[in-house]
Length: 128
Image 1 (cartoon, rainbow, N blue to C red):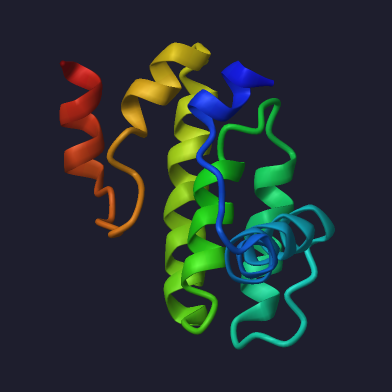
Image 2 (cartoon, rainbow, N blue to C red):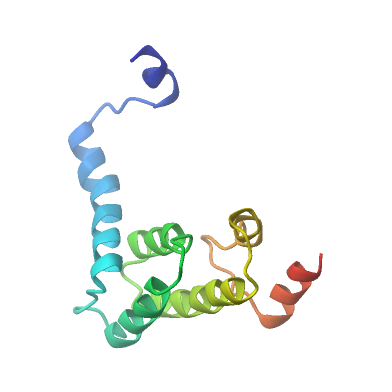
């Protein structure tokens, strides 16, 4: 237990941590796995992207999707754009049969604040 406390910071207000930090991520994970964006604008498109992403043979796309949904819940247009771009990137890496290390290396910059990955920027990353 001593090692755990050394590396995991303690929270002064655990109830606030659960409500403000943990719950949004758990809810985002639940929505991703159930494809249940019923109350959002662009819900059909978001659920379609999540359905396509869930067909991949890996789950590397889930952490960035959870992060964006948890942090940007108030902006369904942003979530829709992000998931569409993430879907293109994930399927591109799938088609190239990238190994997990390569997928991680190529998606390092694919987090908040979001910068769209264009065909030109992706191809320049792949050629290096």
